[in-house]
Every structure is written in structure tokens, then in C-alpha cells.
Length: 179
Image 1 (cartoon, helix red, strand yellow):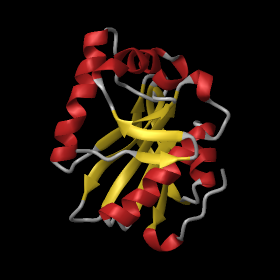
Image 2 (cartoon, rainbow, N blue to C red):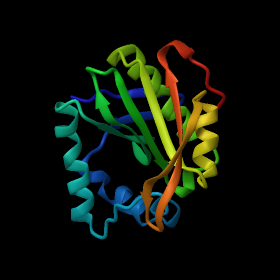
Image 3 (cartoon, rainbow, N blue to C red):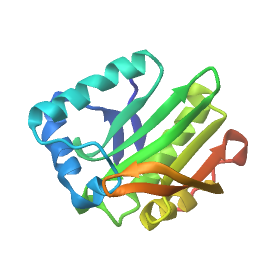
């Protein structure tokens, strides 16, 4: 069972079927849609998305947590491309519009990264975002992720292929986070 992670008034918790409306709202948000190819039009699709995470956790390939405040989902933080053998993963996150601007993405991601280093024993967590996604670049900087370069034409988004910034943090980089 995926753990709960507490951080300063927020909880990262496993997704529940009752969170389908929040997931549907997120994937309907133009600011979130801009950075995803994935679309969701129905509550059933949202429940399917939620229902896929336990198997990915059990397979040790990926995980996603609802970022919740007062048990209501306000965002997502996750580990993609998880490899316990290679001790690495890629960070993902999004926050609903009404919760933006309060450092929630950085606080939740910081807690998740520290848990991944300490509990899962990861050595490296990477983060990729479109070079024009300045908000994600700010989150990466707050988290202490070093810029490693630009991956040309490697990220497909709703409007086509984007160059992607590659950031990463190593376990040995310490616990720096400016939230």
C-alpha cells in the first residue's frame, strides 16, 4: 500500500475513486492541458486513471499521490519511470488553479523527493518540463534541481513537440528547498 506523506498542512495520499471530480477538473484546466497530451472527458476516464495507480505502485514502475488539504485533492505529485534497480525516478506534479501561488507544488514535491531518497533509497530524481513552462522551471529551482541541459524536440504536448529542460537532484545534493 502506498504511504501517506505529511508536510506542513498538506498530505500526499493515494488517490481514491471519490477524487474523480478533482482529476477531471485538473485535466480540463487549460493550464494543465497545455502540458499534457492526455485528455479526460468523463468521470469514468478519471476513475480509470485513478484505478491504474495501485498496479503501477505494486509493479514498482510509477506512483502518484493526491496532494490534499483538509482531505480534498488540490494537486498531484508523482514518480514516473521509477526504477528501484537503477535507484532513479522522474518527478511530476500539477496543482489546481485555486491552489496555485502558495508554493504547494514545491512543498509537496520536496516532501516526496526526500521520502524517495530516504525510504526508497533513490539516488537520482529527474524533472523535465517544456522550455516555455516557466512555472515548472521556478519549481525546479526552488527544489534545488540542477539544470543538466535541453532535450531538443523530446516532449509532446497538446500543441506539438517541445524542447525540454532536464533538471535533476541527487541524494548527495542535500535537502535544499526554497519554498
